[in-house]
Length: 436
Image 1: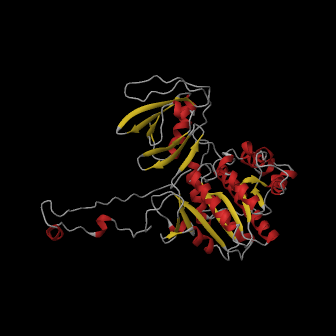
Image 2: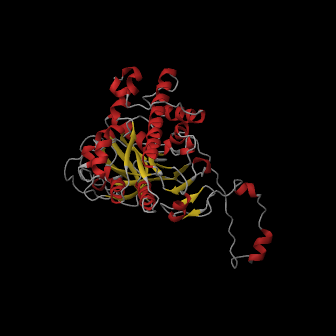
Image 3: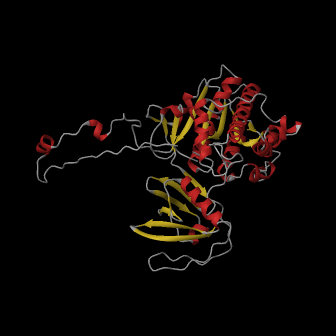
């Protein structure tokens, strides 16, 4: 959702002097004006290389191979890996790690935030071959209970089944969480209360500060309202406590390490799931693996990192990634709404309906605003040094046919009606601080 609540930017200037232009290299070195090191950058070097997508990084900023990360997991009871629910790179890294860990001969169990504990029988039936992969989303009621593209998670289930890895749903069911969000615990039936964790462990002080900041950024939440704020803490604590409780149960049931896949906000700094696992299993050995989106590198956020720029697959038919100067269109699906609006891979989206795009969350804010105002979502696009606009129409409605302009690539005629989503649908708890 938010990469950092507050980010400090440091800019340095690199002076380059080439020999043979006016001065010799020696003269250049002798006569260059002195610059104090702190003027160029007073912080120590955090990451020692320029990583590619999916590459692992130690907390000391060193490159790690997948094999080295697998070796690091030896002796740990729980491996927690954080994600952004719409980020394709995050899921590819998870799948590579799941495949490697389930093939190392030590045994492994898989726990998923994405599935409620009330769907365990369906997961067991899938692992036994009684439910097909194609039928699994329907059996899990995936579209309603989770909502994110099942295709991003599909290979998790394939790898687990092929390698005999038990899979467990970790979460409180969607409908129960919604009732708590609205009415608190008093509104639950006895049957629904039985689905809650046996003990609800409250958030740490540092996590409360973060949750306050997240809550303040949502217009339907009032962080100044003490009752509403405590309800928000309660829901988050129930979520984290239940996932921890189920991970511990899974560990004791099979006596194998447990790989937990959950939103990054539940993993970072050990605030969420890890804190509760240690409460339920005091001797637990826990390794946390976090995505690093670029920018400031905070080595305290996890034990191991992997490079994964902030990106997600839009239902409008494109994969987007956050950049320092806008949002990059990485790919566009043929026949999609994005293609018909004239967008192409390599385009840089700099504004959305007048809102500067400084990250994917700003796109969400733009989508929310135009949806509420019943206005079209219009991107300002930079391509090859030229700027043009791309009109994707009103969200939730068919995009109107584009009118070609002289300075804008002509869009293809509207092929068929298509409904566009809001910029980024929320997980069942709004928000869970997941996507970061």
